[in-house]
Length: 299
Image (cartoon, rainbow, N blue to C red; front, side, top):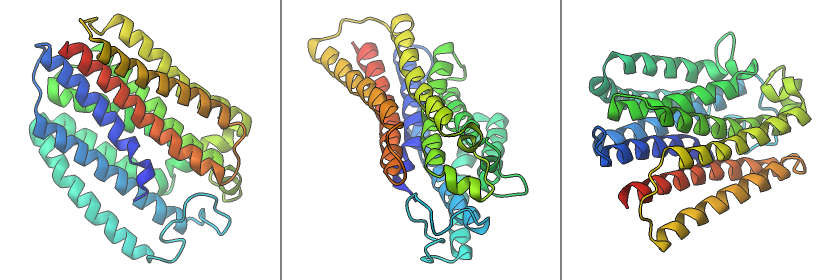
């Protein structure tokens, strides 16, 4: 299941749904808690399905060789047969279909289209005649589906509209989740190139990929300053609320700067730590932004 990657599913939904709650609390629309739970469950199931598909299809494509630097994969290690993991993939997709059917029932045909697109992207990421991940489109795919769709789509289900601040939040989450993917591809740059898998990191080269990674981390932080200054109510915050919000953001900014430095000095298996910490930063960013929304709208 690769639990270290689950923040890529949790963080965008958390931020999008907190935005929807904050606007409902301010008298702008409504908020449905069971719907929020179903959106979160659907996102997690799709993330697990992506991991299963990536595991089995990369193995069949010969990408996961003996020199793989990333965490061990169940098929490559012989712990499961390819057909067994494919069966697990079918089960997870069936569960996601049940959750997705509820979202379609609630939101209409638009969400049927988004669901079909998500399913096709999930399978086309590693499988098919033209895998997206092998043609430098992995990060772009993550940006769209774990940023724009997860945040803006989930918000629209709740509120039926899409103000500018939602698109900013969707962009922030899309950039951060793309950074998780980019670390993965920087780590596997040599083995991917040898296997003919032309990821974005392979196309850019190590130095430029590291530079892009820094932008993916730091731009969301800069955008958050604009969100706070332009769109959030000042409110009458208590000292405790201010300390909580400020403390979270100090940690997020410090971690983003730290990881921007470490990407240049970590190599090989140490990039597994970089990946886990980037995923943790993504979730921490969403938590900090959610707390900011709650304290400012509840004050």
